[in-house]
Image 1: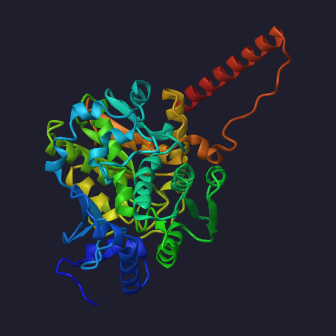
Image 2 (image 1 turned 120 degrees about the vertical axis):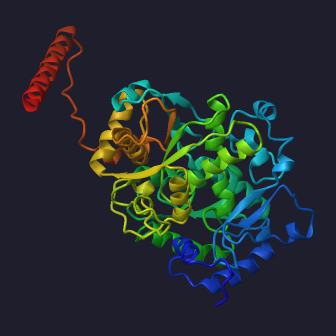
Image 3 (image 1 turned 90 degrees about the vertical axis):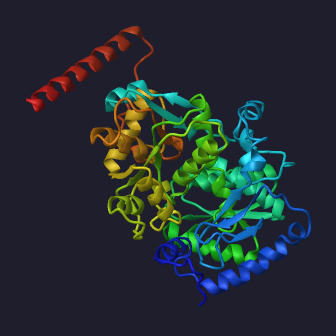
Length: 471
């Protein structure tokens, strides 16, 4: 087996995170042949020079094609940009004149200048959270709320919009993904809008709401008896065999770039300045690295003043390989078997875990993991204080944010943004039995007054019980 000069244990861990035991030579050989066939019309014709694929470790470049792994050192590829070219096109003025969605940042997304967006996702609210902040002892806490992102209520709508733009460009008529839920929903919805056929692979224990939210768009759903890592391995084989565009396999470098728009929006919504801290949920680990990349691009282009930003990662205790690596101060990601209600974060062998760990440790941040009980409690606390109903991943982020303040890792006066990435209507099963259903009253004022008296008495009883317990 031939290895490039940059090959290391770190590179291999990253590769293994994406493909596990899949045969390397078979995949690279056949995938590159297929990629060449799919993109021949692009490689032989004029290509934009504004962006290209580049290995994250050895730096080898690959132009513009559906490929995700370097054939020299087996490390992941990412999109690189000609920032000099972007300087005249990516300015505060041109952005403000753009559409009221993520495509206002099109000049630094991997699509051609002539691309006309058809999927208006992004530009979600950044809201100050004073009541939640008071619970944490925080005076300057903000929530980036992608629980309302169009069209499927998670940040995955952003990444899919970019991935499918490239799928169309490469000529794929069928697309798919491996998913823990939100990505499945987004791929199904966006593909329906674009008229593409879809095959969505998910673990068989996925939340019913997320399964329904995939099937309703007409997608072909394939339930796999295994966890996400098994599903992802199968997706890699299918993408090669059938020459389809799988957004988190052969389209992964383009897909991941959509996450940068979260970072762009945070900076713009803060008045073109950067926060002190960002708290991000971690599954595969890509989101946290792309927000960092967005901030760096904004600094290099002069759109924001340079300042240190600390990145904090949030995971569930039942699946926390990146958090464990951060705590051990290492790049080595030890795969775990997921066991948590936060299924959207349940990736035991994260493809970008190494890079997420590097970002967190390199910026002076930290990572924490929280239990299922804490997750549910945090979902309720966020809803009761700020009126935001998040899924389990948001419960993870909220609970971790609370702990970071409690442990002094984030100071009360620092401007902190916590990322809520999905809507609670998708994971209502985690709250099953949490709320009693009161007996229906007759439509009479006297009955209502009795109901209020009973409620007040119950509340007073709970208060007295709490005082007794505290003493």
